[in-house]
Amino acid sequence: MAGALTDPTRAPVAFGRRAVPQLFGELQRAGAAARLRALTSLCDLVHEPERLYQAVTGGFLKQLKVLFRDEDPSVRAKTCELLHLLTSHSIGRQAVLASSLLPPLCQLLDDSSFSCRRNVHRVLNRLALLPAGAEALLSLVPKLMLKLTKEEDEEVQLLLLSTLTHCSRLDALPGLASDGVSLLGRKLSHRSSNIRREAAAAMMALSVPMDGKRQVCEDAEVLPVLIGLLRDKDVEVQANAAGVIMSTVIITTGKQRCLDLDVLPVLLGLLSEKHGDDDKEEMKKRRKALIMYVLRALTSLAEAPNGRRLLLEQLPLVEKKAEAAEEDQDIRRATQTAIQVITWTP
Image (cartoon, rainbow, N blue to C red):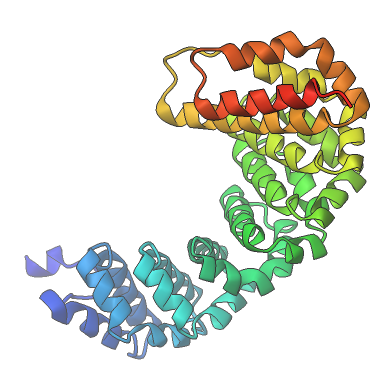
């Protein structure tokens, strides 16, 4: 009966605090099957915060480096899965960054096993949540940009885009130097709204520096697609696209290109849209971000003479937004700033 209850895919687990040291000891045994069973049991075990803390602080992480080079792709994939679970907590992310695991882990981005590569991307994405993690991954940005053109799996693309966003928010220059605007631009028209959303978020991070604004303007396809995304059904896609436009119209070339592409009617349309009061709190936050980006874009566009002329014709619409009782203070303040710039006379 006891034998019937034994799971052949998992190693026997010792009681209490002895379990983690015992399983890490099993990893050093000969035979891929034994190592795989121990890894599977460890993956189950580290869902418990106490065991995760023990695995991270007990000096066991260095043993994983050898497993990255294991001949069995299942062992490599399961090792990266374990690392992904360990980095679910901030203490795990900090421990990995403080260890020597990152260089050999990054080599697995070219692993022959798709499961292994996907788990590596999951780990890197979690590490990038920390500023120190994003900084550690900056040197990897050119390779991640290249991977974006090769990986077809949607989850991997999302992970790549999210990681690139975190890195580019810290420092956009590596992404810009890797033809990031053009590569991300190709993802803006993806059939998946999740991909469009993450690609626009990454593009917004790249558009912050002056060089990023110039590159967005110089690419013939990016701005027309972004203006099209202002009509997307996903509010976050709209907001991220509006964020890129907001950044781009700060410079004179950006203003003129967006005005030539007839962006004002689209932005004003977003400003005048009505939404029910039954929106959930999270959706209200997303809509607020969208409206704030739209108002800042309009404010910048009003600095151009032809932009101001067109906006003066639509001034009642903007004033109506400032007078709306349901709007919060941030939106009212941003609207009033826009009105001041639109009505400014030399």
